[in-house]
Length: 277
Ligand SMILES: [Zn+2]
Image (cartoon, rainbow, N blue to C red):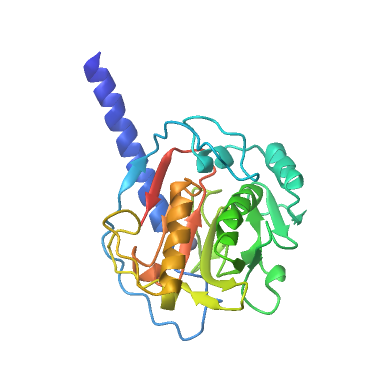
């Protein structure tokens, strides 16, 4: 009996590891609409990331009004990932998120476009007409996660998020994720490049994060930069991690491809593992 339990645990751990490696492989560098003249990508380094299986004991006592009803033992990202299409759209209506439904899109389960700020924070894509590109399409559940992210951002006086892309139909001619509705392919991940503050200050992940490749991002081992902008970026990432808002949260500490953005991703399959690096 014990042996059967051990075998099942081993199989689960291996399956989780494979799922995580697939996610990390799918999060490539930003789309070609990024800054021209970007230096060529180096060979990918071997990945060394800590995967944590979620085990929260209870929901936090005080939650912002945006929050989904607390479910003890189930993290926020997991609850968002498990929302059905109808439940998710009802949530956007309840929270007065400005959006319109988009045409059925390969890879995205519930495709929408944002038509205004989410929780008083504007999420802007790149280019002159970002709303005409596929890169600003997103799944309803990602929009639901952005409501929660905005609650964190507002505490730091952030009024705009400039992102490289949310949906990416293809990358270098290949489907971004052959598994379908996950990550950028599924409109379930956002690559955050800049934050604009209420006073007009523009904070850049590339210039201001002040990280170190492979170093810890949050917690006692982490060494955030000394500037106010570095601390602000670090606080936002660590508060999102504390709330278990995203299953995958990658920073410039992860690898060269993420030197200029945060990759924030909710898994659509309601998994209970989390990656922060
Ligand atoms: Zn990404």
